[in-house]
Length: 273
Image (tube, rainbow, N blue to C red):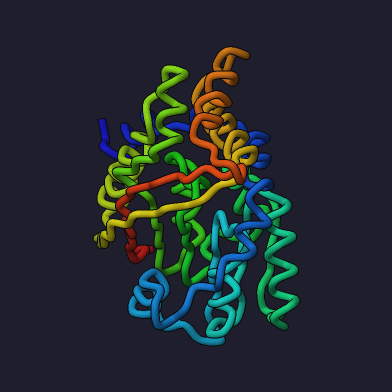
């Protein structure tokens, strides 16, 4: 069997549940909108993009899983149009509000599920100089990656977390009989395989980071529960186990200190038409 066809058959969307994904990221919109915009002189993802393609007033970019719009808003300083899409209406509302506050008029944001998107009806096929997805679960199988690739006339870029451990979330998963985030490693392998089998020459860049993130205990319980629910149906006992475990790590201020270690991998290639 052709390697690309084999990948298409084995790397298929599982346990995605659009409504759960929307709920997860709707809850995070307020905190994401408080993140500072990425800076050209510090953000390696932006720097690599600018090294690979000229970014000027004739350029169009597509950000899939754009969150609160930070990358698109920053790119709007250099390109003609920056388009961002996300499954979360709250994220899109935050992105639009942020762009308006900063007086940015060449961003366009839309809320829809990339997995269900019809890129031809949207007019997206081949319409962008750069199509990218930065630290998002929106690119989660062959079809979602294939659509991202088809939208670019030049550069495709993805950044994904891999080899990731989350101290408390992983413990919650283990309490209900689930593994950690191993699928993140598989996704990276599949992304490289896709690009290589399409005849591209993917480049990879790595950085390992440690994150210490204080979390509101109630919000973190909802996060871990929904993340687990994407992997399997949860019983009342499962949900109680997650609540109890997080409660055992909650301080007197209602905060949980999550510690994450992850390798962030950027993969990029130029599309050959």
